[in-house]
Image 1: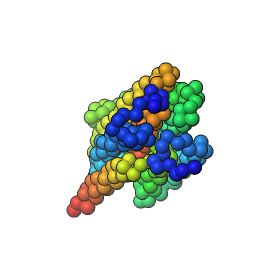
Image 2: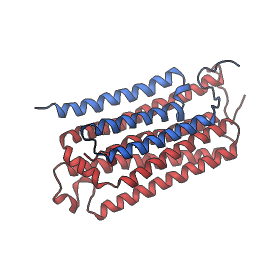
Image 3: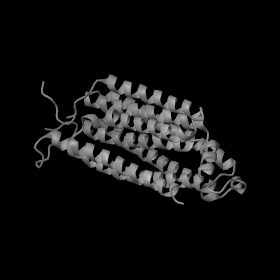
Image 4: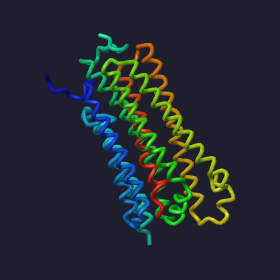
Amino acid sequence: MTEESGHGGAAVPVSRYVWSFVALVALTLTSFALSRLQLGAAETSVAIAIAALKVLIVALFFMRLRDEAPSSRLTGVAAFLFVTLLVVFAALDIITRP
Amino acid sequence: MSKGGMILESHFDSMERQSETARLGMWIFLASEILLFGALFALYAAYRSAWPEAFAEGVRENDAVLGTTNTLVLITSSLFAALAADRLERGRPRATLLFLALTIVLAVGFLVIKSVEYGAHFREGIFPGGRGGHFAHAPAGTPIFFTLYFGMTGLHALHVIVGMGVLSWCALRVRRGTLSPNALEIGALYWHLVDCVWIFLWPCYYLLRG
């Protein structure tokens, strides 16, 4: 057996999809439960961090970025990082105005 | 030479390279979609920073149980889309069609729940653009919250509808036996992106109650 470069249309074990799904449901229920606890200032960071983790699972395993060619991985990761910069600085601008 | 209607073009040295390039094209399109929604999330972040109370109160106005149900519906549909692509790769077109059908049924379910929510807002006098009785005594910033809410969830719902079209078209081609596994995977990528956008919309509009 030779190592595949890119995922080469090679199927991966179905269990990988099922476990990703279980993790996504668990994170969703956790996030919902935490939102009922009135976490105060930490609320936003916790909810967004869980959402980012869920998107990472979808991207790596459902969208198969884990096995994807470097060019596609770079495109996906760069778009996400640049948007994060945009969102964070849009908020910082308003928050830090005197 | 041909696999599910796919022919190796002379300018690619292998089928794998050709498939990889097709997926790269899709990823570039998805990146442009990420930037489109990213700009709207930046608006949300800026306005929420400017009117934290109005935004928290707006979130409390939304039905968290319906929103959470829809999150679970879309996550499950994403699993089915991934399994559909997996089945076609393993040469199982009947199972592929079953999973595609399940994905589309869940997409319809998502839209039904979303329209129930929109209906409830309209009855309470909440419309886009700050129109409606609800805004008479609401804090400043509330009209912006709901305009963004309708704008972002509406644009997302439009993507759900387009995604249903893409998956239906894929299903028809699978039935005829003319869809390559790689093409279905590219169609599924679009559906997963729709899922990813909702994963961020959900905390913004249903969880962050302040």
